[in-house]
Length: 425
Image 1: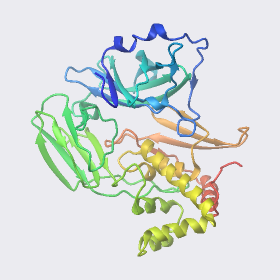
Image 2: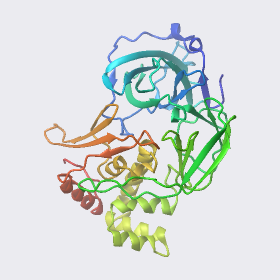
Image 3: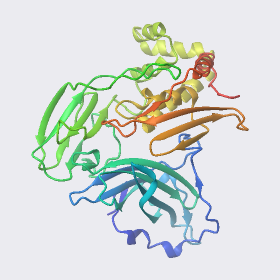
Image 4: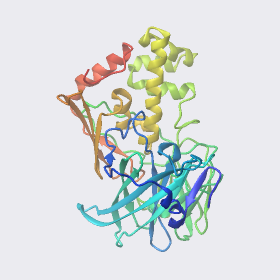
């Protein structure tokens, strides 16, 4: 099925029709793109994934690839048809032994660059060997650029788990990959088999900012009490459209920890377009009194502008500081959102202040962000551990250390003096 802006690849045969027209690669070396994984200036692959367990107990890995991310080459001398080539592969590991490979599979897709089409959606069937829980390691490769990127998904096949639901946009009936939405979005949400009722819990609580990286404080338990709960008919797809900001937790059993969480955060999320959306992230750079003064100003926009001008000293430098800082907010929202906005998470906090790490070491349950000088003689490493949070599989907590205090205050001072902070100059 081919749509105006998307293509859902159902038949493997369809994407292999052009294979004989493509030149063969003479260099099989593939670069694993860990260095640029969170650097938008370097990372060209931004695949999105979700897993759905259907009514027959089979699991599918859905993948969305943005065509602007791919390298396309002409298939003949006319230069009228351009084709990209991607490889998607997965590996299945048991949570009890992450070194034991249980199963793996891969597929290569040849994709025509069609005007007006901005992405493709495809799926692979997963052989999970009847595991109740497993980790999925996914590698997506641009075969022509010879760059790959890896990610991990925790999958539960238990009834009512996140992977028991499939969310589709009412606008086009395509699978929806995000965990966030805005009030203008309409969805249909289907459980993998009919149940009497589906319950929706609503949480309005705005979570506090993360503690600084040098703090000894431990994060409190989050979202312990919902504001309201209602039920809908679970024998058919439910129609979902909610305007209130907060978190919505969709379950088949309210006594279980399993469910699907969706967040509605701001009018323009993940983008930053309004004054209040620009104001909140300033909490990392301001004192409590400074922030309250800006927040209670009769003209918040003017107060925000004055703050940045006091940092940049001249309009040109100020514009550059604003561009970099709020681009980081946007990128944190896209990559690190969990049960809250991405910039409000531990990874988001470090990303805003220190910028993209020079390298990332990523496993199924941990990320190490490495900042270093040009020769790697000096290193600053932040370690984030994945939590077992019922609302999100994208929640990571920083291993805090008092040694980070020096770097934190250096970075804040640097921003306040109009300079984007570099850990090791």
